[in-house]
Image (cartoon, rainbow, N blue to C red; front, side, top):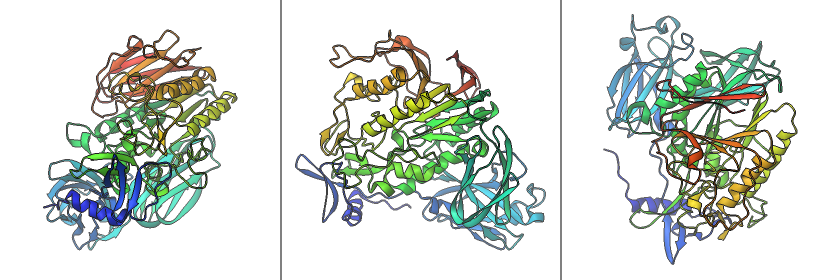
Length: 621
C-alpha cells in the first residue's frame, strides 16, 4: 500500500524546508518564521504545504539492471502494471514501441525475460544477431491510468548489460535557413556524436545534450544520426528557406492538451497523448514546416519541478515521433503553474503563488528546463516602474517563454500571458502576483519594439502574435482571460499595490500595438478555451461593457483572433458575449489549424485530427 501523508506531516516537512527561503520583495504578506513559510491574511497564518512529487523521472526510469535472462526493474512504491515491447530503431521512420507483454508489478518490481519473450520469430529487431536492443515500456497505476512511457536499452545476448537510452528526443528547434539545434536527454551520462552534412559533432558526457549545427544551406533536407554507445538513431531535417524568398509552406497551430476523460492515451499522466499524437501526425502529413503550441501542455498546478518534468516528458513523448523531423515551438499557459500553496488546517488553499527562488524553482524556470526556445532580449519585470527593489531579483525570468522566430516571410511572436502567475490572485490579492491574461509592462514594451522592428523588415510579410489567453473569450473563460466579465479592476499586484492599468485597458494597449502600429500582424493565435473559433475584429464589433469610462481602442484595420484550444483538454461550449455575433465556426471538436502561406496570401484550414473532417476553411489574406 502507498503511504498516505497527512496534511500536518506535510506542514512539518515544510517547516524544515522553508525556513531559509528569501521571499521576493514583489510579494506581500508572505513571511518566514521558525515554523516555515507562511501567508499572513486577516490576522491568520497559513503555512505553505510541502511539495512532495507524486512521481519523478528517476523513479520511473526503474533503476534497470541487466540479468542473465534479460532485465529487472524497480519502480519503488509504484503499484500497477508494466506493458513492454521492442522499439524498431532503423526499421521505421517513426519508431514506436510494439507492445506485446503485460506484467503486474510485484512490490514495484518487474523481471523481463528477453530470451523467452523475444526469441525467434519475435525478434524483429535482430537483437540476437546484433546484441543490442531497446525496450519501450508503459507504466499504468492500480486504477489503469497510464503514468509514463519509458525506454531501457541493453547490450549482449545473455547476460545482458545496461546501456544509456535516449528517453526523450532527439528534437529539432531553433531552426533557421542556415542552422538548427538538435537536443535530447539520456537516462545516464554518455558522450554522443551527431553526424550531419558530412560533419561529426561530439557532445561531452552528460544526460542533456543540445547540439548546435551551422553552415547549412537554405531550404535543404539533411539526414542526421545520433550515435550513443553502440546505438544509433537516424532522422532528417529541412532548413528554412532564405528569408523573404516567399517559398510556399504550411505551419500548424493548436493549444490545450492537458489530460482528459476517456482513459487510455487520452489520460497519460498530465497530457492527452492520444489527440496530440494525431495532431502531430496530421501536421507532418501535410508537410508542416513547424508546429506552434501556445500553452496548457499539461495538467500542472503542481508544487515540485520533479513532478512537472514528468508531465512535460509525457507531452514530449506524445509528439516525439514527428519532432525528430520538424520543430515544435511551445509557449506557457496557466496550467504550467508551479508554486507555493498556502493552506488552512483543513488543507484548503488560501493562496497560490509562482514558486521561488525564481531562478531554479519557478514555473518559468521549469519550462525553460523542459524545452529549447529562442532567448530574447527581454529579461524580466525587474527594472519596471513598479519594481520594489532595483538591487534584488524580484521577478522570474522571461528566458525561453517570451520570444519570436521567423520562417521565410512569416514571423511568430510568442508571449506569456501567465507570467509570474498567482492562481489565487483573482479572488484574493493579499499575496500579490501576476494575473491570468495580463501582459505586464516590460513584456508589453518588448512586444512593441519587436513589432516595430519586424515592420521595418522587408523580408517579413505576415506576423502572427500568440499567447495563451484570448483577448475576446467566447466559451469557458469569460470570467477571466482579457475580459473578466467586463471588470477592468482586475490587475496584477506588486508588493501589495495594484498596477496602474486594469485588464481591459491593458488588453487595449496590447491590441493598439498589433492594429495601429502594425500593418503586418494578421492574427492573434490563442487558446485557454477548449474549442475552436475565429473572430474578425473590426470597428463594428462591440468589445466593451456598458458605461465603460476609459479611453477606447481605435480599430483602424481588421485583425483576426483565431482560438484553438482544442488539443484534447475537456471542451467548453459557447457563451453569449458582446462580440458573439462576430464569432464564426465555433466547434468543440478536436482541431489543428493549418496555415498555407504563399507569398502575400495566407489561407487556413482547420481539421479534426481524429476523424480528418474539415471544420473550417478561409482565406485570411
